[in-house]
Image (cartoon, rainbow, N blue to C red; front, side, top):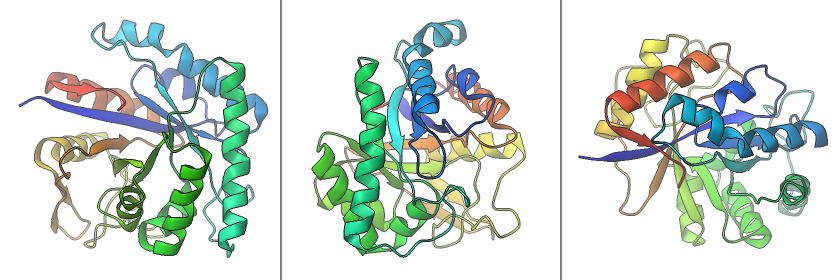
Length: 265
């Protein structure tokens, strides 16, 4: 059986390994001012994405796709790095999203490229996975901004269901470096074990997701996550993690050994 998967990482957050990560990922989610990032950091991240092809050829000559550029909007919470819930009306949230998407789009246009996808960040991402009203506001804003964009959401959650209901191109996202709860949600970062810090565990989780459509929750529960026909999936490797570059290279190499093609949708 032939598998294909997107590997994404969150970039433009001031971490040192952004450029090096380009050799292993197929999609980048660029901070666009809400939780991190400014015009300069967005420009650097976009330029790195566009130049990724030369770096990737050094890793694997079979991969000839440039890294897809995505927006990573968040609550306007730089102090809390976008991880604090904020009470915003649908109108306020739409304005926040439009402002951040427009900021990154301007950078892309100046570089002669365009946005590929949108992936909410932090608290906004987690809230949209469970709250239909928030998910609906995000999907509607993306549709209004550019209906051709892909919207990334937690696989099997409210956010992906709402995105598909609004006829947006939808990416079901999994995580190699986060643990899961029995209901399929991510373990909150405030709880022990939320972040997977062992590389072998992260690689094994990524392979099991792709090859068997399964996740193992923190309590040992096995969660089935088969993709609906025609759906697209992605696996996230957090670019701000202390082992980001190691995890990305090891997951990428494990996929290559297993005959799994890494490519953006």
